[in-house]
Image (cartoon, rainbow, N blue to C red; front, side, top):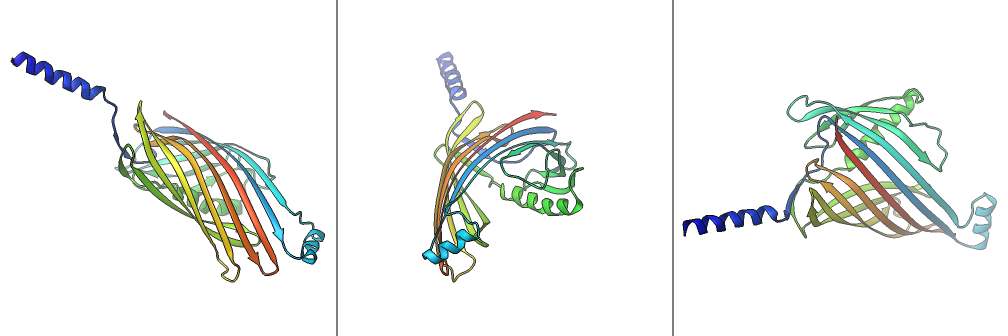
Amino acid sequence: MRKIILLLALLAQITCYGQAPNEILFRVHYNPEKTYNRVAVQDSKIIMRYKGSNEILKVLKEQGLENPTIKEKTSSTETILKTGKLIDSSSFPLVMEMVKIETNEKSSIDLNGMLIYGRGYFTRPITFDSIHSASLTEKDKDFLLPVLQKLFSQLNFPEKTLKIGDTMMVESPISIPVASMNIEMNITTVYKLISIKNGKANFDVSQFYTMKSVIKKYPMEGTGSGKGSLVYDINENYYISLNVDSEMKLNLQMESVGLELTSKSRLSQKSQIAKN
């Protein structure tokens, strides 16, 4: 009888080990002594249509403005971020290299080969303190450093224990220039854990955009949404794949001219992580 009980206990233990986990601690951060090779590809198409009287549209045409104005942008960015040894209990040095940037838009600033130095942490976003580049002026560096810092500060995920079917939400406020003014936009991103397999957690991604004009006298209506997926490496505490397709529509009335804007974009981001 005792042997039967032991056998049943052993079988139960084996069964537990054979089952896939249904819970993770989602915690995104860089780790010390690692190399993160990331490639991000983004495509976007923006169509702007101007509305108004024939006289107004004629003036816009004489000023060289096409109606509709169509802008298509493609970009590919490869970066390598290397982290050093742990300095204290929670921080470590890092350097990020802009290996290759390709885009169909002209730029007066060459960022290829640029090195950004900073520090990584387990519990908060990384910080940058200096830029090294032979092609950039000190003015360029002073401009880029806070821009990069703000960008990486927005890539901050909450730490949360999730079971399959659970969701978490991230709010991302941004400001975008449209027709000589700024539009304040808030992107709400919902991540839903759908499966855990082979050390990877797979998420569905849904985005919802809300927006408003900073100039109250100009009426505005805008909506937007996005769908995609994210793959999180549990052992590395970092996501290795992110894909999002998004759409946005905006209607803005500026005195005698109306603007109708539609935008479609696709983001694909892949990361490979290795020990230094």
